[in-house]
Length: 185
Picture 1: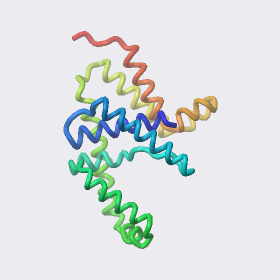
Picture 2 (picture 1 turned 120 degrees about the vertical axis):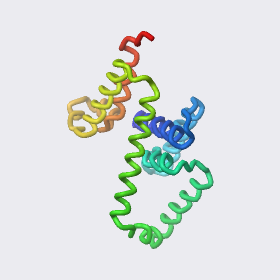
Picture 3 (picture 1 turned 135 degrees about the vertical axis):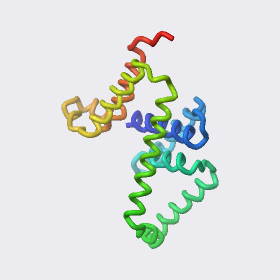
């Protein structure tokens, strides 16, 4: 399961850096993010709770607002902690009309898609690159939409893939990137 969250974390960090700061994430930032994600999940296990992961919806918010200030993030975390401690506050926030929440969700998820497209199109879209992206996206979406296909695999493989198309898509993209011949410049 950690493979899935590591792939998601790398994507989220890349999207935040690209959308919020307009640059690619460094190796140090990526490794630090994955390490913190693993450390947080390890601490969660000590308290008997499920592992945690980065939250992809935040990528859309950062891309829309360009806010990457630690103080703003700390204030948001503080509000969430207060909502957890005071259910009346959480109830007050939860009465937001569904149309407002739906509109914000559409904008946020669309921003995530656009951030992904920006990352993909940074490289020249050659036949090789299009093949890699198409096969990986098709496999990832297909398995995500119909995870029953994975039930035919051994239990170990089911555990690795976790009912998600993210891991198989990432593995296929990596293998295709290694196997397919590089384009001549």
